[in-house]
Amino acid sequence: MQDGIIPRRMAKDTPLLDVSEARQRLLAHFTPLESIEIPLASAVGRVLARDVSTSTPLPPFNNSSMDGFAVRAVDLDGVSETSPVRLEVIEDIPAGKKPARTIGLHQAARIMTGAMLPGGADAVVPVEHTDFTLRQAGVPAPKTVLVERAVQVGDNIRLAGSDVLVGTTVQKAGQLIRPQDAGLLSMIGAWQVPVWRKPRVAIFSSGDELVSVEQELKPGQIHDSNTYTLIGQVEACGAEAVNFGIVADTPQAVQDVLEKAQEMNVDLVISSAGVSVGALDFVRLVIEQEGELEFWRVNMRPGKPFMFGNYRGAPFIGLPGNPVSAFVAFEVFVRPVLLTMVGRSDLQRTSITTRLLHAVGSDGRESYLRAIVSRENGEYTAQLAGNQSSGNLFALVQANALLIIPSGVKSVPSGGQAQAWLLDGSA
Ligand code: AMP
Ligand code: MG
Image 1: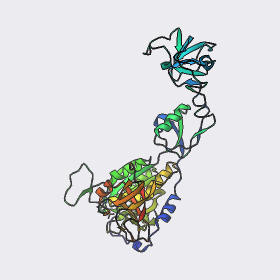
Image 2 (image 1 turned 60 degrees about the vertical axis):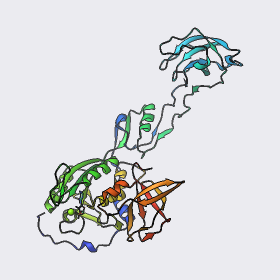
Image 3 (image 1 turned 90 degrees about the horizontal axis):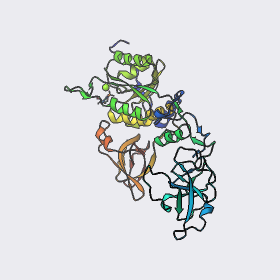
Image 4 (image 1 turned 90 degrees about the vertical axis):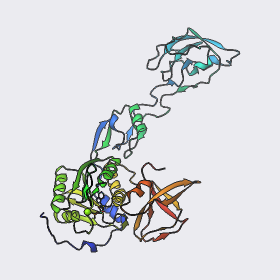
């Protein structure tokens, strides 16, 4: 494509899409990527591609939940501090050792927490309930032990399978693997884990006024902030960001970066800015002329100039340039796309009903306002966080939620209700 003046369609007149329709049309283009096996140690934050069931019971064998003595409960019938009973200690069983002997009448074995219960034993007496006072590390087992309290059959024993039976589905496909999930997977010997491949997402920022954060600003310039917000948002979804940096306001520069991203076979290209109706908004133009435009402009605030299409087969999402608009449009549209690609089944933010602490107005478009949500006496309250200018990233930074005013609603009174999405890290 040559730089210069190019006749453009009167796209300004195309009707605005509803948010939900735009989201549906967008999501229809995406499915989870291929499933791959990865080492368990790097699985946290990824999404399971298959249900996982266990062929090992948990715990895998009967074991002691206390440091003490494995006994037969019947030997301790009626035992108390005033009438203790002496048992012969026939073995010392540290954790990790298979017991060699079976506990007979009036016998016991010293046993450590997590050690395998010997045959014949049906309970463990905690060391605190015996006369064995030498409890420091390294002290050998006594020859005999005086037991000062009775036990019931099963006391202080963790039975094989009492936590999880063989055949139980312990993890579900579509679930984000948390640290505790990785721990459980290791308990059942799952050293490799089926997860969905991470999408590679190319990001670029368009605009001649933008300079990267390391550079000093000249008059008229601003630091590119969308790149950093977007890298964070992409990575928070479990995808990999490929940063193409700042792209000049020329059709050729836009086409060059799209070409590079397409050649790299990325799974998605995201840009910010250049999709509005300014004289230098070339991003949409390049997609219209060199790729395919699926839709443009959504009935929302902020985020209206959102666009979706593809560049020679590479899916392309054009976000608005204003920093808050880009963030919100990512939340509403791109986050569910990336979560779909990484295989997540929960695509929505947690949505709560809040009571407004003051009246809130809107222009009738579906609005996503920066808000501070607090919990007071069992209910959530909401108030706006600063001015709602689509460039005011400071207000977004102070917010912990996006307050949603539905399409067609122009005002909600103080005390009225509105839904809010809780953002990452909020209560
Ligand atoms: P545009 O969509 O190109 O008209 O940009 C809309 C507004 O967003 C303008 O004020 C731009 O300066 C601003 N903007 C665009 N891209 C970025 C960016 N990467 N970082 C910060 N502000 C931006
Ligand atoms: Mg611009």
